[in-house]
Length: 88
Image: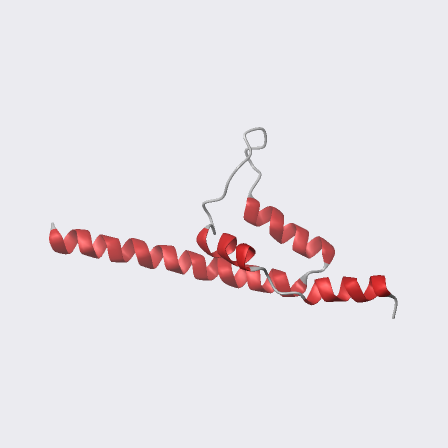
């Protein structure tokens, strides 16, 4: 097998890095936007890049982390709401 093809295959099967995991989990919908591109969304642009280059493993993991991140933030908001209600 050609070394270039081997590297392409390895990149396609690679897992998300710790930094990428945190970005998709912590920032599932609170994403930085460029001032000159108001529709530029980090998560969306990364997902599009994963699709474009065939990073199926990363795409699957990113989508799962986005769902988990949304669940986390909703749960955190509910917990804070409960505490505020309980101690008010």
